[in-house]
Image 1 (cartoon, rainbow, N blue to C red):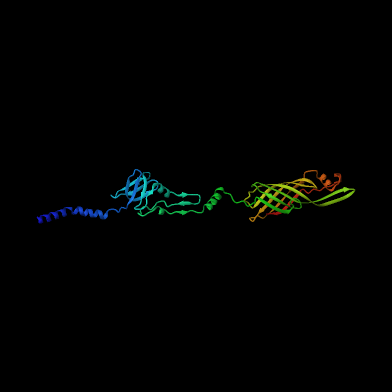
Image 2 (image 1 turned 120 degrees about the vertical axis):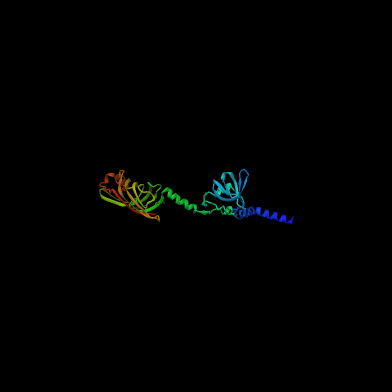
Length: 302
C-alpha cells in the first residue's frame, strides 16, 4: 500500500507540474498593481493603478487582471492614491486649471504625476507667480491705451518781459490738451503828448491787467507747445485792448520752462478819451498819438 501511494503521488506531481510552473510564471511576470482607487458617483469602487488623467475628460486605470479601462470624468466622484487622502473630482478640476486673482496669476503644469502611490494634493504641479499685479496692470494700461504721461503741468506761474505790460507776471491753467487760460498783471509804460497852451508830455508806469486764452496745436505729452494766443487787457491810460499772436512754450522735465510770443495788439475803445481823463486835460488837447501794434513776450515759468 505504501508503494502504491508513492506512485500515486508521483503521478499527481507529474500531472500538476505544468499547472504549478504556469502559476509560478504568472506570479513572477504579472504586472505590479498599486492600490489606487476610483470611486464612481454610483458608489462603485474600482481598484488598480491610475495610468493617466486627462483633466475634465477621463481616467485610465490598469486593473489587477492586466486590462486597462477608461472612465469618463463626469462619472468619477473621487480618486484615492494608495494610502493617501482621497481627492474629489471638484478638487481635481481646481488644480488642473490656471487660477487668476486680484494680486497674481497662478499657473500649473498640465499633467499631474499620478503614478506615485504617495502623491498628495500639495505636490501636484508647479505653482509660480507671473509678477506683481500693480506693475502688470500699469504695463497693460500703458500698452492698451497708447498714451504717455503729461509733461505740461495743470498749473504754472510765470514772469517775463512784455508780459501784461513792460514787465509782469501770470498764473496759467491747462485743463485740456487744446485749451489753456492765464491771468496776469504788469507794469505798463506810457507816454502822452498833449497841448495845453504849449506842448507837454507825461510818462510813467501804470498797472495793467488781462487774460489770455491759448488754443494749443500739440498735446500735453509734448515738451514743445505751439498755440494761438488771444488776449484782452485793461489799463487806465488807454482803456481796453486786444491781441492775437503765436505762442511757443518749452517745458522741461523738472517743471521749469520758458515761453515766447509775438503778435498784434491794438486799443479797442476811445483811447484818446482815456488818455485825456488820465492826464486831466480835454480830449481835444490830445493831438498826435502813436500806437505800436506789435507786442513781444519772453518769460519763464515753473
